[in-house]
Each structure stands twice: as structure tokens, then as C-alpha cells.
Image (cartoon, rainbow, N blue to C red; front, side):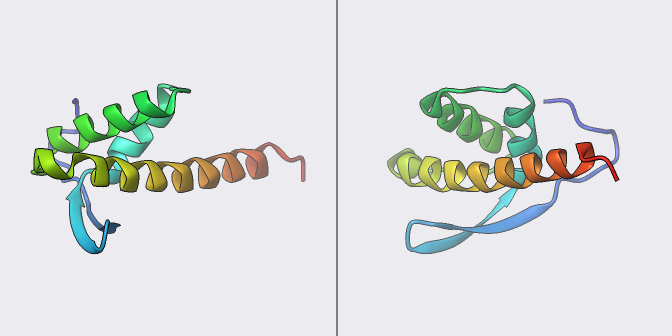
Length: 93
């Protein structure tokens, strides 16, 4: 995954199952998947998990489903915000 030379990804804390976890590069991962316009939820889940791991986050294989559920939830929130912003920006003043 290409990143700017000197920028550090931001760590964000989200709820995974019953616990909170800090994830590095979550926002970048969400944006990447959104820009690819993937429609299938299973593919979105797999892509997000892969990208979050590429940022160096350890995810135990036994917790993959919990992480995928949480990542998909965060993705849906991201999409809602992005679509709302896009509509707001395209509305004539």
C-alpha cells in the first residue's frame, strides 16, 4: 500500500466485540475500499481486514470474524458520511 513518505497513519480506537482496540491506518483502509467501489459485503470485509493487517495491526485468526464485523460497521459509517458530504458539495448554493 502506497503512502506518502513521511506521513504516519493515525490510530483510531473502535469496539471489536466486547472490547476496544486501537487500529493503525483504519481511516486510510476505509477510504481505499470506498474508492474501489466494492459492492459485495464479503469482499469489503476481506479487503478491510487485509488492509488493516498491512498497516501492521495484529489480528488473531480466531478473532477475524469479530474484526470483520467491526470493520464493516465502521465502513458503513464512513460511506454514509462520504455520501452526505458528496451530496452537500454538489448542491448548488
